[in-house]
Image (cartoon, rainbow, N blue to C red; front, side):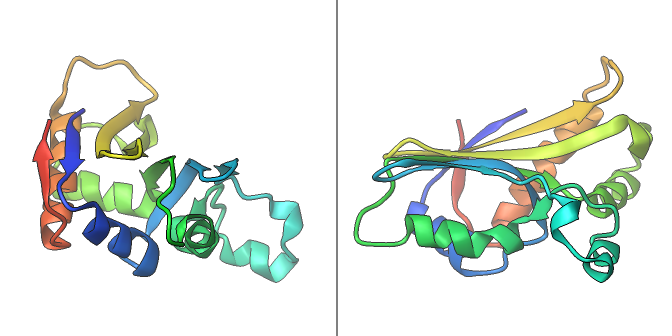
Length: 165
């Protein structure tokens, strides 16, 4: 787990809210505080969807950030910045499997619950904290380090300036 301070919040927010940069991540949850506090639970409710739509979900239990992003944009956009926000994004199952294969991880994909990015803005500073969740205990931190490196590479590719805290 590492903490990265986003150096240019405006650039980050453009990518986060106005482009598809983060759309392939799943949204676990989010909180936005403006004139009121808003909580977003990324959990999908299959009974909301018709049979054809349910098939397209492919047994997914969380919303993609791209599906929720327009609603969050409405909450955040305006002349005033939010007082705070917090979003927890998770790498999708298919991307987790690709990541494990690329890094030659010894941990099987069924033991990886989540690879996470926690984004927290406190009104002044925007931090990204990485995290991993496994269904087994291991002393091996290889997966943690690989995920930390991958998030940093992702930010560099997207030209999101940051510094380790």
